Length: 299
Image (cartoon, rainbow, N blue to C red; front, side):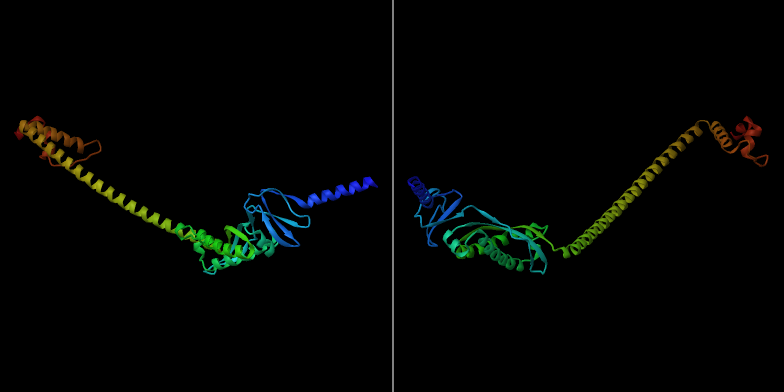
């Protein structure tokens, strides 16, 4: 019986110690309560981690003091120009006022539920005042998504801290997508736009090709005309030089010149298949008939 009493006393002492002492981790904050009413907080700023004590009849509630990330399900919104978008966003938050947080929402899932409603309403209002090209565009100057989300974050932060004891660090969009029923029409417009641009580029290319060909033909004609003119000049100079040489040769020995010219003419005009009908006193045949006498008679 005495040993049983010692066991009972030991268990009671252990229960008393367990209800009195508790450990607060560096990643946690604690709220000490008495009959459900908060008395004081511990390690809110991260400088009170360790072993703490309280009265056994008092309770304690541990909360996470780290940054938390809430990922709501993608939601469909409407832009200013009546375009439907599926927005997938996330919220970075932490518990700033543990007492207000405990009284207003109670726990982490409750806080995420409040954040869902708050952030969704602000994002809906912001996107409803923004055209699609300010959210999705190839022109960087037209994009205002970062400014828009910074404004949403600021508007959500004040209300969340005041009503729920939650500090919203950032609200960002992970992905913007189109509803399934709109994708095909958008893809068709994109294909039509790309085909229009391709036709435009082809037309511009053909126009440039025609210009290049015209310039090339013009340059070819000019070069050929210049070459023909130069050839005619050279040919004329050659003919003049030949005539000068012929004249000099004729002046030195007219009979020899006539002989050579006559023989050259015979070579060009007479062959085995040539038939020539001329009178007997023709100058063309005199050399063949009379020989050297014809040349001497010419003198």
